Length: 384
Image 1 (spheres, rainbow, N blue to C red):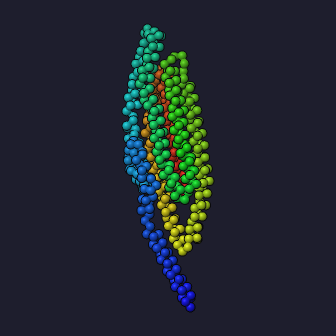
Image 2: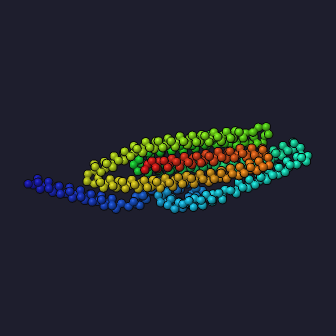
Image 3: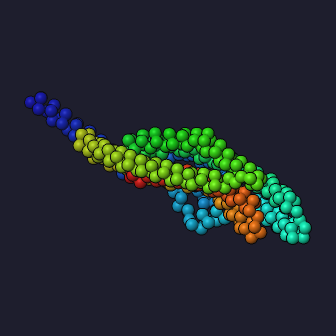
């Protein structure tokens, strides 16, 4: 009799304890504040520090878009009008020098054309060649510093963007892993860290010396009346274009296929975890599974917000340099058109070669920006 009474009391105690535990779990789940979870995840993941490593120019661009941090709601006020306004500010800050240089070059070309027109009045051939050489040398003196500055800016832009990506990659990888995609996180981390390091090394060691060599050949070819290196710059531009296209295609295809494979494996693991929590945790498994799903959903929201803001930040790093190259290329092309009007072939060859150099610099910057943005887009979309 005493054994039966003891068993009944023990059963009542266990039942009361389980009901209290279940009620507590339900209360915790029902009182879960998603905003509080997002804030804690935002701080613990290190996403709150990303805005501090963005350079001042890019941060000013983000401020024009009303983006002050990497929170999920930071891009809520992001509109097309704000983008156009920010781009117009960049163009307004960078068109003055190219316009001034273009006016100077056009003035030199017109003066040379005036003196050349005196040939019928007794201007000797030797003096004509001398005037043409002086015109080219004056043009080289004016145009070389900004072109070399654009080449140096390429290195700085790639380095700045790589430094930002190397700080951003661990943050987004942690968020991807926390959202139930550990294999996708490890794959993205390994691929992107290698890409950033290799890209910076290739640009600084191989690409920049090649561009400077092509620039030097362009100047030498324009000064000398015996050789022409316009074909060399055209060949360099075509090879660079083909190489960039091939590399972007291979990288995008590889990252997409790897993301599909790892996402499938992660989805299976995620379902296994939810099943285990729901069925093998006694009494409160259902509540814990719901709480787990709530946290995962918050992580996915934060991951998407941080990823989208990071893509805008990458664009903010590259766009000033890209627009600067575009403005200079437009100015050089306008100079080539003026040379065609006055039949100044040597100056036209110089400006055309330098326009190809600037176009190559712009292509490298654009391709790097697109690769970083595509990689982030693929991993966010494939990760769910």
